[in-house]
Amino acid sequence: MKFEHKSVLLAETVEHLKIKPGGIYVDGTLGGGGHAEAVCKKLSGRGIYVGIDQDEDAIKAATARLAPFGDLVTIVRSNYERMGAVFSSLGIEAADGILLDLGVSSYQLDTPERGFSYKEDARLDMRMDQRQEKTAKDIVNSYSESELFHVIRDYGEDRFAKNIAKHIVAARKQGEIQTTGQLVQIIKAAIPAKVRAVGGHPAKRTFQAIRIELNHELEVLEASLDQMIGLLKPGGRLCIITFHSLEDRMVKTNFRKNENPCTCPSDFPVCVCGKMSRGKVITRKPVLPSEEELSDNKRARSARLRVFERV
Image 1 (tube, rainbow, N blue to C red):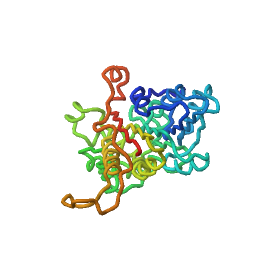
Image 2 (image 1 turned 45 degrees about the vertical axis):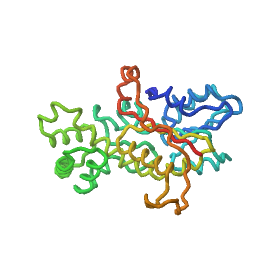
Image 3 (image 1 turned 30 degrees about the vertical axis):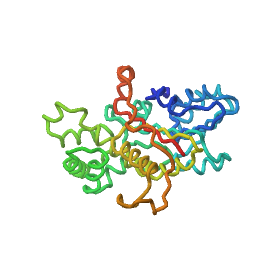
Image 4 (image 1 turned 120 degrees about the vertical axis):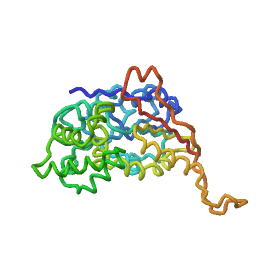
């Protein structure tokens, strides 16, 4: 299957990166290379673009798409949490811009055998890095009822998390849960019919929660934000697109803390903690997709872009 993914907030992200033709730009979630292609078109022969992704299919697709840019582009198969090590290996000290486009790609959702979609019956996988041994099937069949409840409640924000966890544990006593189709039927049985009739797909939140847990998405983001700001040149920008309220809140809180890290009591006349600002928040409110983009790509609906500039 061809790797297809519509890059959300494309023009807005490129604009906020303030591209310098000879600058160094790093994409921590390369995907199919949509954002990368747009940035590379603005780079000169002295520019550098580094694309990082852990998904083998994304690496192959982006390599083909970005081939016309030749030596401008370096692609590394890794997780963006190891961005500092990638910089060191390439001899890069700091970047003019860093981009993250979080969440799951359209290709991953639309390729049934990857096991991300609740709309197709396939084996429970959901690995963003296929080198990883643990899959969604392992979570569904090995986590305790309490662990499943907390994952679905915290990462899926599903009000029926307790009942869904209970139904999963009861169902697996009859035999291992192996496919997305089996899991969807279990989730449906755990949610009242009148709720299923009016809401979105009943399995959406649980699938999201399991995916986030399996790929450690929130832990990786939280552990990487300060590092990425530290990898920017003065005036360099970090642009992050989120699709989940927990991610967006994490980015918003981190950016504010890096802008104003002072921990002194508010009634202190001067700062004595010595914590210095690392930059400024460019987007007081997140940048949202335009109506035109939403009409063209429904999956952009929950996208939020936040930008931080290094001092």
